[in-house]
Amino acid sequence: MTRASLISVAVLTALIGWAALAADDKKEKEEKQSGPVKWTATFEPKVVKPGGEATLKVKASIESGWHIYAVDKPTGVSKKTAIKLAAGDKLTLEKGWTIPDPVRYEKADEETYVYLDDATFTRKVKVSESADKSIEATVTAEFMACNEEMCLPPKKVVVKATLKVEK
Image 1 (cartoon, rainbow, N blue to C red):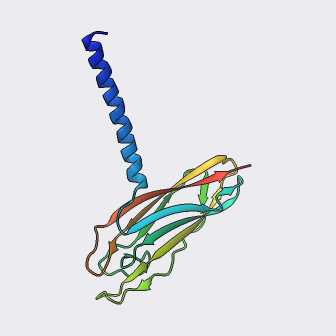
Image 2 (cartoon, one colour; image 1 turned 45 degrees about the horizontal axis):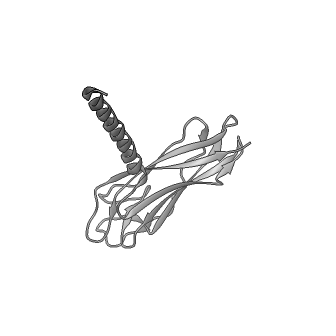
Image 3 (cartoon, rainbow, N blue to C red; image 1 turned 90 degrees about the vertical axis):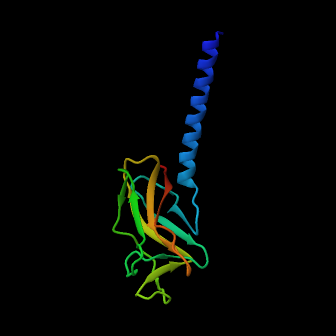
């Protein structure tokens, strides 16, 4: 092999390695969450038949001493929590989200409602008759986490849930 060929092979190998690392970094950012709030999304049941129904459960696990703000109640000057669902063409969304009841945050100067500990948001979905194998739903949660001393900047987290479809 010539010197130019060896250099070309080395450069190509480095580029392939870099591309693989970049792909892993992107996947890691989607899956790894940091901070006092961790989000998960799951379907119940986990397996349905074509034309069947399931419930998507999106859970915010909130560390002790922290809170996030309500979806549909006053939150003072703080950012309300928002949940968005991208379900693709094989799922039909039924009605709106079922939202947990927030609690009044007595330490705030204004009327403010928050979620403490765990908050689970649910939404019914119907699977199309033509669905097979599996369907992935992507949920985007936008929220702001605070404790008694500070608030973190508003954050957007993406979580995914897979529903298996068996005939």
